[in-house]
Length: 450
Ligand code: BGC
Image 1 (cartoon, rainbow, N blue to C red):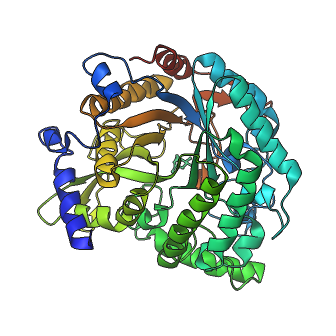
Image 2 (image 1 turned 135 degrees about the vertical axis):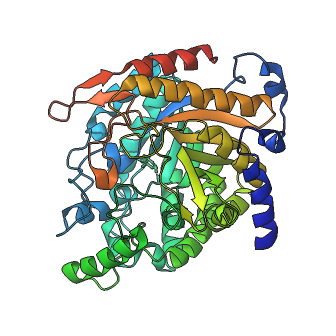
């Protein structure tokens, strides 16, 4: 499909994002027998994956060989605070995975940390691979299907020093890491995702980011930050996922996805895909660039995903696009701690869109809300799930719902303030407290029904 056709198709589907247009998007994906059997009831298809997600850097703690560890500590860093011990999930994983299973879930999505597994170029740590093997074993013992992400934003320092994804060598280096990790862990992996949200750098061009000072844009801030960092580190090539040249990085990451998928599948036919950051794009005004945005940000990845086993959808809110820019949330709209509009229906719309475009089963690999008020999380989950169920009833193949996040954790540049967790973490004592939303979602998971 060429770019023009893609834009046209995206436009048709996005018009279907509104209530009145939803019928247009009906029938997206392929109806399965399981879907038809559960239509009209509150029950989800058999073997539906119900889980919660984490990412290594955000929960493990002391990820000292990663690029992020440096970024968090650089002068004038954008990070509000360093990740430090995080939730010490590196040591407390057993307790956390047990808790997830006790609550009634049947899946756990987490990432393995390349910076631990290959802390120096070419040295693969068997001890660290064994750590992840133990995590996978606990999942299996407790009846949780593990969904493993091979790269969730962070990269090893040495990789950052040689230009990260801007460097064409990144393709082979990532494939080699995937090959080694799969050789050690592959027999225990349920679903594999090469990359988490590789479309993020393009998305930034289109996103309304409330916490960015007026008059500045994120790509500009990133470019200036990279120049400063290179100087400070005396490292002329230094780059990272977020700081990299978006175009070059995307080319290399797309090639890396295909090459590493082949490496993973050479070991065993594990279902492989990737997950995308998606907003529910809604047109505002006659000259809305929403279809351009969809072609620009998601298009190349959704095309690539056509050859994958699934597409991971990660959605938090909607985006109203006027011209080439996203508008701020409507006046008076309820906002989350991230400044996003409270808009759980965004999940239904993006699931339909991704299924239609990629034509492969969808797994909701992230969806959630940053809030101190857990009653808002309860409502968000219920409304988001009702939307997922409508998709399924209409024949869209959705294999699972994985909530972000299992734990209150390190929310990147925003530090520990935003609370996305189903479980609260006291960062002094590392004591966990289960929130009512965890109990409610666990009950839904156990019943496989709303
Ligand atoms: C990322 C997570 C992040 C979450 C909430 C996603 O973009 O994959 O790492 O914590 O959104 O902002």
